[in-house]
Image (cartoon, rainbow, N blue to C red):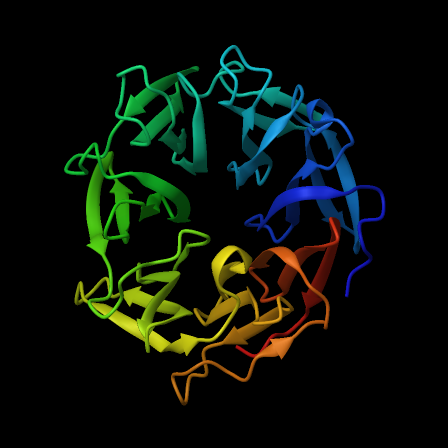
Length: 353
């Protein structure tokens, strides 16, 4: 275990590992007054977490994201209640020790909710659920906002994606200059879609997928990971196994363009307790960090011989939330979670790969 973050309490957080192997945490500060619940960022340096300061102007929403520029510096997106329109997204980048807005305070034209942020070449892309009723886009449509040449371009959409296909959770990954975007579609029947953005063109790899044996996919969590071949792994929780909600991983095979199951479904927390994070080791081995049936932080990986999940490893017998897992290029794994609103983390030097 790494030293706990003693100085602060978190309502929610996200952890990402930069391409040079440095873990960062962006978190919503827990405060007595909601107006003071700003965004903070932590960095792991020399084995200890240190604060990079308060990032936002004031209160933020519970969803945020982190990505990294070509110089491995963090850029964060968050919903700012102090913006011209409450909960317009803001994006800030760290330059040395100073956080500065990317393209001004408003990174979206109106209120958004779920969102994901990534650099593609020299552009910065913010994919978000448009949460306004101003007829610019349909309410809860997927909005693509791009920063380039010093300004934001707002509210592009993905060709072929219906405007009434409600975008709920969005997650993105990058492979070189190719962006992969996963979207949980919150219309009946629930489904997941995966898109690829390459050479300024969107392609649907997985279009409104759901298991024919499932009647629903949980909207509580959803994640994707991409290997070096461009195969996309998708983690979700559905009731395809015996009518009971379980976490499962599927893979879109970039060569065959087929969707195949990865391992067997995993019995875990369900309903509002569901929480997981999917990551691939540098060798391409899938790891899943999740809350088990007693909400304890638990890790499995895919065994290459059995092609099924390893025996679950429970990190500690305590209820954990906000679980995040990431790998550095050297194979070190970082696991972060909250316990009673305090932030805890583990590092594994050589996970079984």
